Image (cartoon, rainbow, N blue to C red; front, side, top):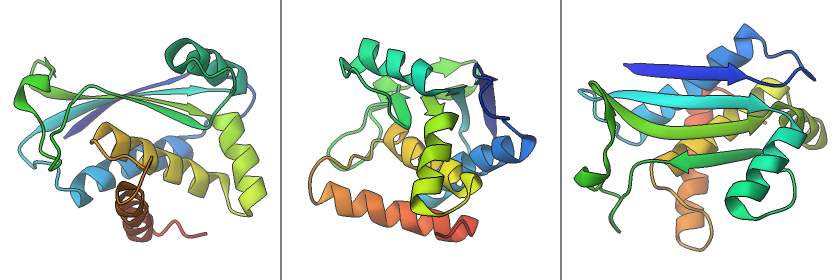
Length: 163
């Protein structure tokens, strides 16, 4: 089971039940695909914001003075082999806290238009991308970039959210 805490703090675009469902499916599919423990229940927090909101968070947390599309704040830590370091696990009751996702719906719409696909596809992709970060994946340098990109494609294919 995955418990979601989803908060929409922006009012520039409608955050539809369909978009919320896509985000939940993206997290669940990512966990299933990369080997999430079927016996572990997770909690994921998702904040929907706009470009101004994510700009402020990006500046405060990463010292980057610009908006971005999605930010990930993992709680868990992983070793070099991708195995969770047990002591890093933080629980709320029986729920293992996976971390926080912050997504600019405004930036997602801009990118969907730029790339010529739907907002639903872009939100799904950004949520998969961010969830992989929560699970210890990185794309800053090879070979990690190729591994993460491969996982993103695999999960998007499973979800049938194609470009």
